[in-house]
Length: 106
Image 1 (tube, rainbow, N blue to C red):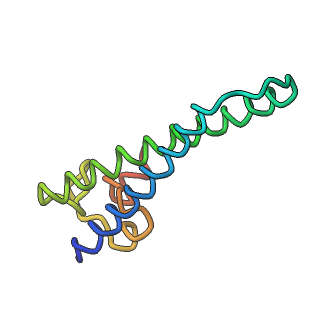
Image 2: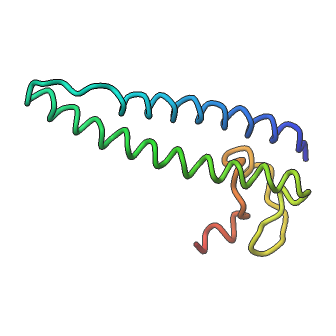
């Protein structure tokens, strides 16, 4: 398994998420439109941005945990059963802490 490749993928994804979350935060700090109709649209947009921000924060935490497993030398090993996580699974979800079998039981 090419741990350096997964570390690079995770680090790049973390950078992308940090940039996106920063932009979402900036959007929330923008002054609100005085027009009632426009404010209603902005509130709806804020809900979507909030959900995106929350999903981004969860993925960021999972990436940080995966980078921690790399540092600890346990990356690629299921945290639940201790079996290896397939490279095919890591290629799709590089921050996963679970093998396919254990993930299916969650």
